Image (cartoon, rainbow, N blue to C red; front, top):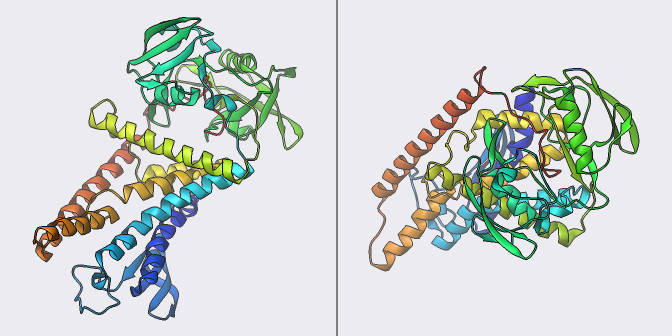
Length: 461
């Protein structure tokens, strides 16, 4: 039940807002909207105002808008309020409105959260100065040392530490050409990030330590449901101040001490002292052996703690963060196309979204809002793909009609119907693939998530 409630809370509003974008622009241009439904299937309740039936339907996963004369199988009368009677530019605006509403929603959610709880460490936006290198890590094997500055990675000049972090994360077991500055000398090295499995996906890890701020503190992030940390009552954002009653240094050495204590615990209980809402709490957790290592199931991360951004910095951060998500998506899909990454580990379907929604609900409001923002952005971009039956397919056909019209040709109704049929088949193939992939990943006996008692995981990510 929690799965379905979580997905209704997380995904449902994003789809309804998408449809509201179509609805409001259609109304603006005088297109008759016959139905605005929250949910699918049988009509449970509703009210009719003007020409529109506003209804609640049986299946509460999103919704839809039905406009007069929009479907090819409808009898078009040529009435001025029909969708097909409107100029192409107005129909384009209606088609774009849904995806644009999703993108704006992602921007608003991320900015809104940053105005109340911003927890991204300052070092992420600074030059990639390396304060330390984990023993035995990919960075050490590449010859990178403490005090080096990464001035180029995978073709990107003057990267921030965030740029380095995400390029490493996206390239497990792949060689990244890196240029480092050591004193006045520049050196070329090949960095091959090691592969970690987190939530059934492979991510890269290099063992690079950033230069922390003087007021940096140690926080718990990235808690995994079902692991000892969450069962002991640890929460995202808890500041960890002591281990077994002994104060921890609030920097990388404190985190290293915590990681070492967990790994060498032998399965004996560990007492963490945390500060939450100004109060100290002692939490007892028993590390479990997973993938040959004792784990509690969270990321001890170093940062400056939560703060609040004013409106303009929050909007700037939101824009940059959403652009970064798009870039990450583009890189991942490019790797799929070039066979550097499997499609199965990259594309998530409804079953995995159910799981992510449940996990977010267990982690709290910030996790829910973060997932809503991510899903809204991806929903907007996905609907812009030029596949008939999606908004992008309609946009493509309208643009094609315009181009053909310039040379005296038309896009005939049979041609549109054939394109819609092909688009529907492609969409169904994708749906079947993601369902099978999701089920395959849920089969018991697959590798456990390799959780994150690892360095270089920024707070709030």
